[in-house]
Length: 264
Ligand SMILES: [Zn+2]
Image (cartoon, rainbow, N blue to C red):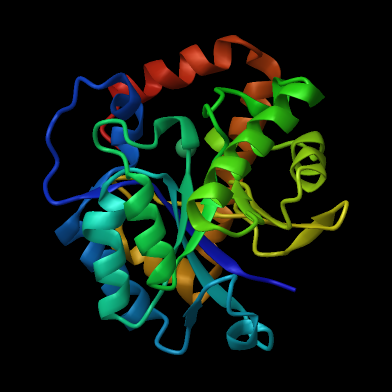
């Protein structure tokens, strides 16, 4: 089974510099609304037969490769910009919420999360505290991150939480196993692959990450299943993984340095 999952973060009306430490790094992943509209238009024009669906509607996508659009962190733009843009095209998204950030400035409130759910979007966990490197956490800490976050979202939505995404892309088999043990049935990581695997009964889906400078043609090509951006992203990802393995703790410092000196 395959799926093409495209991972966004925040979308805002207009980009403004932020001093908020929670928003500074994700700024590299933040799109303004006009840019986001061109990304969605590129999906429509370059992949006209694509089925943009949601994991909550399996009947729509079980016979073909679906496109899932995901949005990490639970920032306010999910509510003020993204949902409206998706709905105007008849689409629904997946919104992954870092529960410790709920109600903080620029992040969604419980009422806004509940409303997105009622409008047909999928709400999922993005851990409780957004740890910098999930794959290094102990088993108990992983279980705590998933179960605290899922409990908070279950209380908000009034139903069990079964969908989640990995924070900061640090996926390992143990991360998948801990999600399964916490009752999560569908887990999105950030490996740029289309194939869906399972770990202890939990479905694991990769994602293609979209940054602020990603050309819309790349998004369209990914949606259409064209090979080159997939290979390009996979190549970059493998290089990053090798760098992580070599650099250990210093990888985060190196990455922050690269991000701070480059316009992405
Ligand atoms: Zn995140």
